[in-house]
Amino acid sequence: MTAAALGDEFVGGVQEESLNDLLRSLREDQSAFAPRLNIQFLDSVLNTFRNPPRTRQQEHFHTVWSTQQRPSLQESAPAVIEIADATASSGKIYLLYCSLTIALLPASYQEHDLHGRGQAVVLLDLSGRFSIPCLGKVMHSHIRSQSKESTSTLSDELMTTLVFDSLAHLHIFRPQSTSSLLATLVSVPSYLLSQPYAHFSANRALGLVVIHDLSAFLWQDRLSSDDEIGPYDANNAKKGTDSPFVESYRKLVAHLRNIHNLFSCTIIASNCSLSSTTSVMGQRALRPHLPAVWNSFCPLKVVVERDTVSRFRPGMSVEEALREKDQRWEAVEKSGYSVWVNFWGNEGWRDEVREAVKALGKGMRFSFQGMHESVMLDEEAGLGPAEANTLPSA
Image (cartoon, rainbow, N blue to C red; front, side):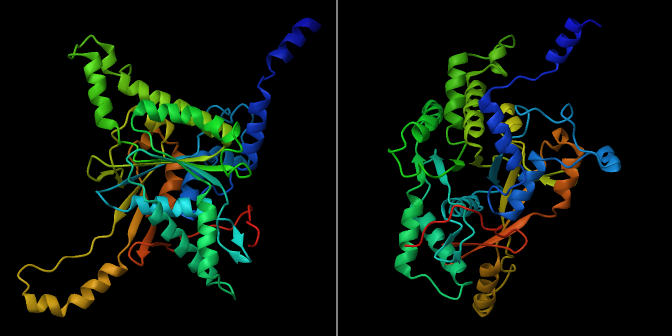
């Protein structure tokens, strides 16, 4: 082999990438196994999908992935979670409140460990039903419950100040259509980076992008797509993957992927369910109703379900019901909400991912207290360790 041929062979094996991709790769490697939500169950499931366990052959020979075996940066799984509900009003909004509370609050405040992350959050409220007062109450209750573990307690005035200061880093957008949503996503990077004096989060990392009610424009988009295509034609390919409806989700995924790559943030999308719970490979599942391009982008879907409380038995008299009133109310108060991984589409998962998800058990549980003003996680799925980004004392 001549020197020129040998040089060409070496040059051909060099992988080229931009400086932005190199820095992003380093950032992703450093935070590959770091908690992203500080909710242990969700962090464990997300880490399983983003960093799959080694194969059986690799475990046997105690090897690690080589550069050729490891997925490229473009093929690595993004940190995306879809939260759906098994039935209407099953509690997914309160899981969102919990995630936002942890993201917005600092890790500690005046020597009180709050288990927060001190990040900025972008919220896209598509249905217009997200309640800031309810989020503030959950944050206030979270601070109170965490401060009880310390020798001293925070005053109500300090807790209220901390809540207001943290909410200043919640950036809310309310697009009224899919086209408005896409335009908003395009403008998010320039809003956060090019206008540092237009908001209070210039010194905070973007930790979460939340899309509340992802299917808010589903039916109007379908109707508009059908009207644009016209009557059904078996030879019309636009009825399939090339329809305007699917194209809008393809653009949505592209914009979200760009934001994820630029900020290394976690994306959470809440969604409604249009089907009933079924069983797949002995595991609970809900059939998704969004296009395949979204399901490929977000393979990790969790479902929130309300615990069932048995009703009064048939034929019970009013007197008997009154006698059991206290026990019945106690059972309702003790009931909570369960979160489990949706196994629909698991045939596309690696075997190691499927087994790791099964090993996590039935999922996590959480409950509400104080008229739904406080989200209480169970111990197994509770808060993760506190991180950096501590606010200074007032």
